[in-house]
Length: 299
Image: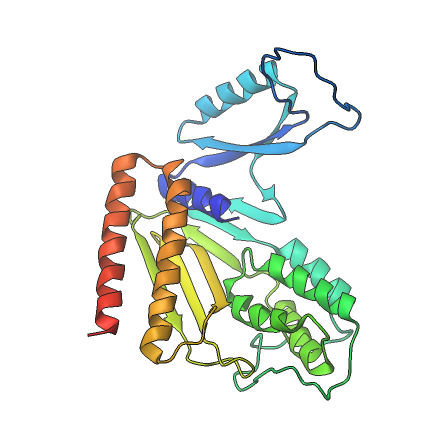
């Protein structure tokens, strides 16, 4: 999903349309120097290709070339991919999961539920609730998994879903109640999504933060981060730290380190799209800013 959002952000920045092709059959080609035996039944791999250009004539030529060489079909302008609904306009690109969200609410939402204004109450502190009433573990995990997939375009629920996902083993009524509140929030925000505007700005900018000993069970802190490419939000996360921080400065340092690691991991994906000088410029600035942040924590 991160790679898809990177491509969409780049397409919005450059102002070109993206198209989609369906690969009906894909085979690995190579020279075989000895006799081989393979099971061929059901050996079919189905996948899609996304491509685009500022010149739509080149896109048409590419599609014609691919359909002549391979068993593929042109699906037209990109508007649906991996449950992501994509709307391309001259001003930018809007991605959302309205269809998926409606199905999620229909399958798991309480009947006649009233939408909630927030995914989680600000004062709630979930714990194991060992004396609480047990609920269906399989159904609870199914709801959590479905909500996790919805976070592909909904960073507004990532923190709440992350907290609830910590109690998938032996869930209690209190945990299920917290999950149902998220669903009721989704019910009132079905059409929410991400807007990738067409702008001249295309710098890589990151933000990170951390609470301090926020978990009531093991007293570990939670790191949060987000990354913008220009004005397009492409990466976000909310994750409990692996170790117990002994100070707020240490918790912030761990969050900053995790943010930096995430950006370094994105460098390979960015290199597939952008030119090398632009990548070096973007990451040079990022390393300088994060280095200053980490130094300031201990000054």
